[in-house]
Length: 316
Image (tube, rainbow, N blue to C red):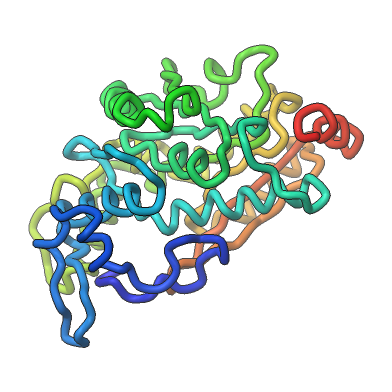
């Protein structure tokens, strides 16, 4: 987004419809006010290429809408767009509702796993704040875990509702995290998008160039991101394929495995991988924010009978 124009096509339950109310957000967080200006159309706007302004906007949104008292990320980590992140949570909630005969499920009876919760802890915060779900956030980067832990410590409303787990082996996704006799109603993941450090850097440069509408020489720290956030060998396709293969070992401990898929051209290969491992059901769920189209894939190994048992014992 280049300014505070409309957030079109968001999930109907998303709180971030239309333009950001920058006047109200500046009252919520006065530090944001110096970064707000009137654009050529007479609307209040923000420079979305300014990493400081974007971080303050996120902080204001989390305070204003979700009751978070403290939120910050270290330099060099990605600053996520909250409306889009909230959309994934809302559509994931729809998936659980559909699996529960159309009855919405809120509260701590639902436990979800966020693969790669990052330094920002956005998905766990939103999932708990909006739906009251319990969340386990796994993370490989020690500095990210340190940042996420500080966010938890500084927000008493999140105590006992979000748990952090360190992934100690970069070759694994679910292993070391999903323990025996532990069950998750849903897993979520925003996988690394790029297939190399160079590709990630070029992508970030393009993003910032588009925001500023002019050439740039170097990235601002918060638009850089860490390697584990941005790229892995084979990019998102290989990461999701690995996730699918590893999910077989936990087929009876998770109702729905899900992952964002940024590139639509990867869907065919992902569907082939899902069929090969013999999933009982899978879905491609479309999402949109303005002109940006996205989607996530969801799959389950549970038979209809197993799903019915799950509903009775976990969701009733």
